[in-house]
Image (tube, rainbow, N blue to C red; front, top):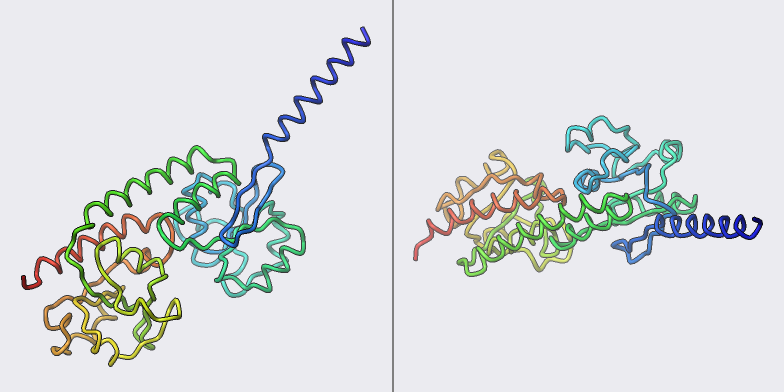
Length: 292
């Protein structure tokens, strides 16, 4: 009897150890740090709007207990308690939410504040997708940490298929040189490492300021005129108004001043893929109007 009871306890202990081992999850973040959780996260704080979107897409929206200003998509994100913005975080508020995982914007959030959160022993996952593959990988890794792998993997696979379709469609497209304006005063754009430039490249277009060092450089009107792009893109008609009368500028002369969905293209969520498809269609119209 005692032997049977002892064997029973051993089986129970072995089962508990195996279940615990299965429950532990881990992923390597974009800073190269391995994040290990004893079990999938159930209380997540997201410190960037795009990361909030990606968590929802990965099936983990219900686990988000705190986020930052401008986290407005999907609609459910608007109802999540705020813990500050990308620049200034309310650390006491974050800690009071008892998170078992904090997802941070690697180069957007305050490094000092993130270090303080790490010092408290709260697991931190640093994210900064650099391209479409990075978006797909981020979905998969967030799903792993949140225990929502099935939905995350399905969403990532759909993203990969959509990107592959665009890549095939525009692989032989006539190259276009474009200026992407993200702010009019001062005049600001993006360099070749920005996700927006990855979207342009997928459409067969080249960012005329791709070689500049800052991720978001300031440029002069004279530099844009010297580059003489085939098209100028901005997020609003008002932002393009200053280029309207410059008929010595190719894009203005040919009417290729395009209003695009700059907010979605620049946010760095998986919604960027359909926004890129729409961008490609706009650039196709420019190609069709160019002289042969």
